[in-house]
Image 1 (cartoon, rainbow, N blue to C red):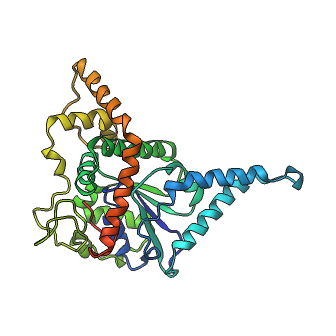
Image 2: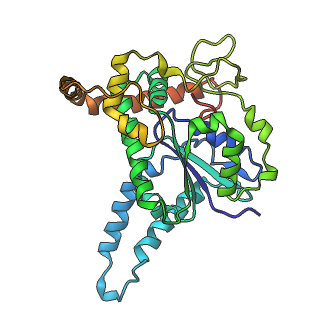
Image 3: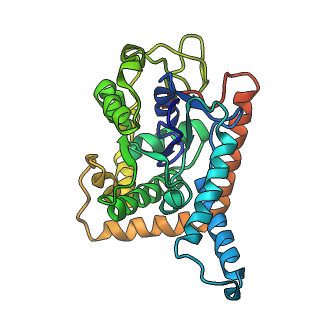
Length: 321
């Protein structure tokens, strides 16, 4: 029987490829998806509430009872995490694989799930932003800020824990697309999954589902039906049609984070003294409607998922572009 360590996949933001990586991992015969119909657990996104809960419980314990072990609060948090895992884990003879398109509260992950294996998926922010605009009708600034915030959270987490021995890996979506066999071989070793039981040929030919631009014959919109890849599938190229104004705006919002993960910025950061002033004015305008827009976007995303359930195939299917 495989060991019980669950596998979590967290994406920097929606449209970062979590479905694709999830499908690759789940194609291993020793892995299984979470309880139906929960295709995105979103546990970590709300983990600050559990942190507040465990803190309140700990403060309510009466010191008169005796001396509490230093690790007791950590054990309480991990026990809550065990309960969440148990809720999702249906096929107990196989490894649980679950995913979420968010890294909010990433610093709390191993407090709740100390025995888990964590895959953190990053994607070129320009590609993720373009896909989010096409799929969910998000505006450029909000999508770019969401990516920048997620990328910065990943950077800070990695900086704090890089040499800690915690079981996590940061995976670039582009590396999966370009070199699926060597990347998956490395991930299988990290996840303690037998390479010999993984079909690398099938992984290389995995059909596309949910692409924001590659719909398949006879389809004119995003859908989750399987589509065989061909030369027209170019998930890394969508943003290359941006005009220089958008490129420079993304550079202002997220250029530093882009380069920290090995992506080349384009174009070079302007040196004019007037450029920062103009960008700050755009920031002020965007901030004015930020919270209302963000709430609206998550509502749109849930409505989009509902439409998928009504007849466009299984929600959360692989290969989102």
